[in-house]
Image 1 (spheres, each protein chain N blue to C red):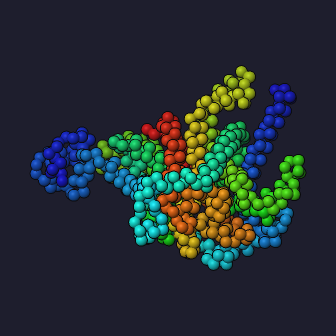
Image 2 (image 1 turned 135 degrees about the horizontal axis):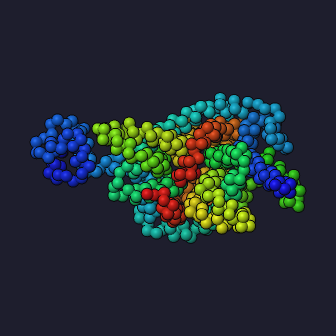
Image 3 (image 1 turned 90 degrees about the horizontal axis):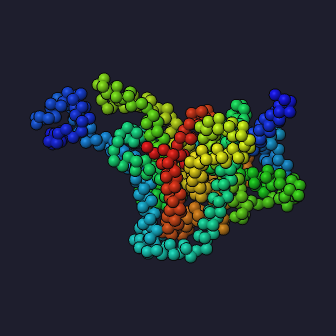
Length: 287
Length: 349
């Protein structure tokens, strides 16, 4: 290889790496800025010359958020609401979706394709449109200002994607295994529990992640169904938004609240990212 | 139950096989009641015989989706032809049918056309930007070394995974007139680059154009990772020889992209394009927070306009439903395209 070609190659590589670095840093910037602001004392936040790293890092913002001195209610209250709603919705929707996915992946019946297409269409319906009718229905069912109401909604809206993804996982399980078990005398129920279920579990984990993230982040229904006066029933996203609306200039505390809400999600995604990549591409996931 | 059904014998061979396996074939065929079976076993046989297992399995999902998604969609359609307001929701007055009254009212409302224009323009700007930037990052990822690629995809993953509410609050802080880093940076940029002291304390959320500029940057930031990762996955399916052969024949990267990569990944691009349109046209949470929680009427997009009609005083659920139906129909048209593209890709078997 001639030197000229070698230099060109090195220069090309350097340029690509530089581009990669710029993209990564620009992309990371908003999240890093949030975390950095959360550790800044008020004097540094109002300072006319912003610094990327806090000069005098403080935990005061986090303390204010956690003991609730800014909004009158501790952070744990909202975390508890969010986790309760999210975990319930994920558990219920996973169970229902598993049954439906088995039906779609393992049986041939009329309307099978229609059902799958229906799921694709349903997941695209705009939530800000349906919220009107659901608000009126839930009002008459006395399910407004109730965590149970949100669980029902989140279960329903997580279902189409969950069924769709799980169906692909269930279809990937080789049929021979089930047939072999059936020949050995296993009934339908045994085949399901002993063969299909263990093999679909990784898929169940992946779909639960999406259902979890959807329910944990959901805003429109929480905003509409939980009235602003009922602070104790706020979910985390509603709390962060309310907090932002009420404490316009207290950016340190707002960013601390937002950090406490966001960082667990991000950490979770980093941990599972490998398993995620395949699911991300496989299914059309609502964002 | 089994007795009555046994009058129509041998409907499906698999049911017969099951019965045989359980040693009940004879019992099923003969008239006497199959005494050796528990109620549960008899039910199982009956289900097998009629092939209704899939329908049973679909009951819970259908009930939940039907009750909480499909029925409300129908209701939106019904409300849109009624004068459904506060009196009707309390139950003081019954709802009256008003024909196309709500629709003609909306179509005569300049706010509707403004919000529709904002939604269309916004999607028209954000979708191409996200597609181009996402594709470029995808191509970049395919060329980077292992470590650098891992770093870039990690940062993209974090942007994608940031909840909409957090992203909105973070961007609101970045562009805050008092202490926000964007105004500070712009005020330091030399004036021949468009910067200058006039940017100090510039308010980004008081008018539609700056607010939607912020939203554009935010949605490109949130949306490009999905495109980049999907394009990267697509690139991995293209045999390396194709690009090598093109290079040997003297094709540059531009030509090689449009002649090889793009035609091969066309179905993937189509699906991504349609998904992006659906997401960006229907953007709500971020727009709600950045434009000030329904505070600025001239900054409404279609979703905010509809929501404000239903949930600010006095509530006009009928009118809001009509807007919601228009919004849904626009998205449905794009969704049909998306479903067709998915079918072509073999996603539905």
